[in-house]
Length: 241
Image 1: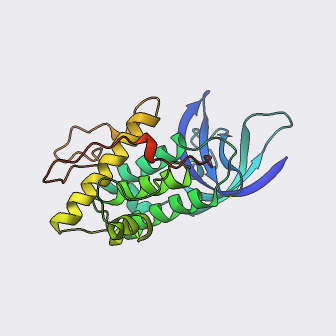
Image 2: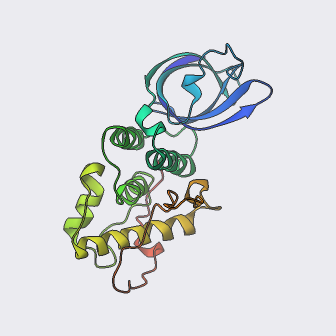
């Protein structure tokens, strides 16, 4: 079987001598694992299509009874060159891709997840990153994956809760103490969710040995103690997509 689909590279790793195995998140087929043959060779074709968070149209061949497809062609739509040239944007993009990889079963397409990832990468490319990017993306992905919260928690105002879930990421700039406290509470929800529901830590949340630690995606801005609320009862018991 041969099919064509839009996809975004979530993860890649070397395979055999010159191949790569890539986790793609596709619009119509969900998360799929595919092989790029011979792309590590000097004259290897399709190498650009196997780079992290590349967005392209892929032609994929799957053998009858096979569990992994082979990419036989494609066309690049966007490689997000500005993201690749900036450490803060790069680490956020890798974090978004790892979150989708870890919170998405194979072969379960979700238009909402695909559009969320594509729009977020596009905003990283053309907008300015701000401290709310990671929390906003994570809360939206939680909702798309069936782990969304029914209502604002930790006394976050409904207006702030709506903005963090619906407004463009680049517009989420906050300076008022009340808003910074609400953002800190959202970061706390994200940290607790990722700690409770992932079997092992995300690679992209490990701090780098730099003055500014790009891996600290969920900083604490709060100026007063935050009440502890059990996270589990607040989750919507929805089927993951």
